[in-house]
Amino acid sequence: MHVPLLFWVDDQDGIKDGESKQITSSAIQGLIELINTEMQSDSTNPNSVADAFLASTLRYIQFQKQKGGVVGEKFDSVKL
Image 1 (cartoon, rainbow, N blue to C red):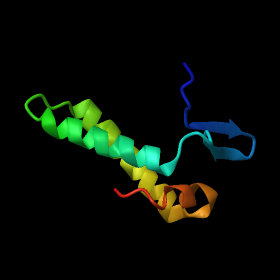
Image 2 (cartoon, helix red, strand yellow):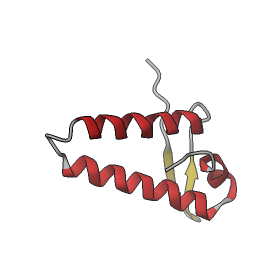
Image 3 (cartoon, one colour):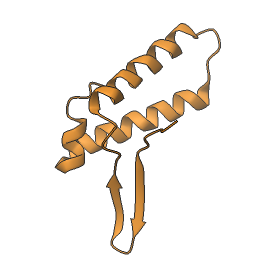
Image 4 (tube, helix red, strand yellow):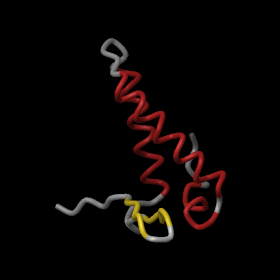
């Protein structure tokens, strides 16, 4: 089973963003919607670690959108 992953590489010039071409903005949007739905339906059993991780991920996506560039453009269609 092949699982595409986002990745970040440290090099001598600093941190470079990279991504698998198989992960589309619509796939990211679908995951965000699914995670939000699942977390809302499981409100009787809150998970602060999962909440914090999701919040951090959404902040990262928002940061990339604001930063612009090639990576930012890929996140433009993702609605947060």
